[in-house]
Length: 115
Image (cartoon, rainbow, N blue to C red):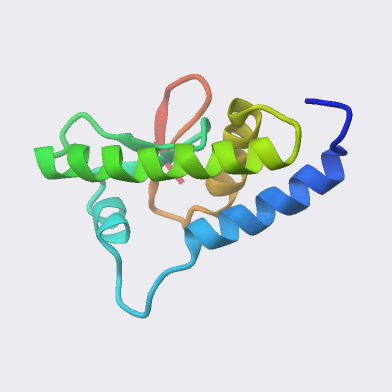
């Protein structure tokens, strides 16, 4: 992390970014539906993971979401003198913490578990 950004400031900015990522419309989103079905889950790296038994549509959805997240992480990193990987890792930690009970999550070792 660069010297221009404190850990606290990055955490606050990341919390806002994660809140925006998690903001859901009144109706369930395709991502929410895929998570509830057990096809997708949050990962420690800040991206959506695809479970092995997921249909092709879940792979496509995860791909689109991960491109959007990667772009957002890069924007946050550029504005805060840090790397996209650092932003993604912090987002991953927050997303795993906030994942509802019963959803699948993938830890930093690559292991899937129900939260």
